Amino acid sequence: MVEFLPSKQAVAGSPFSSVFLASLIVQQLDRWARNLRVTLDTFNTLADNHVAFASVTENIDYTTPEGRLFTAMLGAFKQYFSDSLAKHTSKAKRERVMQGLYNGDLPFGYGKGEDGVPSVVEEEAVAVRMIFERYSTG
Image 1 (tube, rainbow, N blue to C red):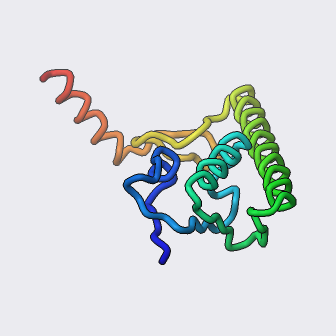
Image 2: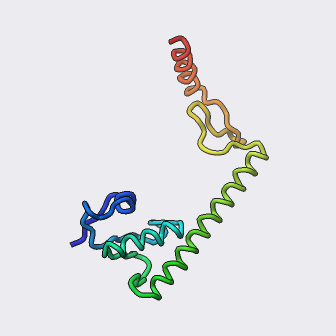
């Protein structure tokens, strides 16, 4: 019998004393963890508690020395790609700031203009002004 848990935190923070778990099944290893230390710590915790781990898309036998080696290598690559993506995203956001462009979601009351620069959306701005006025007058 396999029971599924609603979150990673339920497994990672649990000594498995109050939870029966025979197998943990994920879509892909990087959907579980993108950090090598978290990956290895999780596998040690699962192994200590005799819990099997399976990935739907990666055919790896995590119980063999070769499978554990491959998991460590795969985890290292997953962390590299995640760190690399974060670096490139930060660089792109910095470049947008240097060009005077907006980063992130536009707040209520603003929309993306035809030139790509944020502009006031009058219909929403009326509501924003009313809320501000009511808040400031108590």
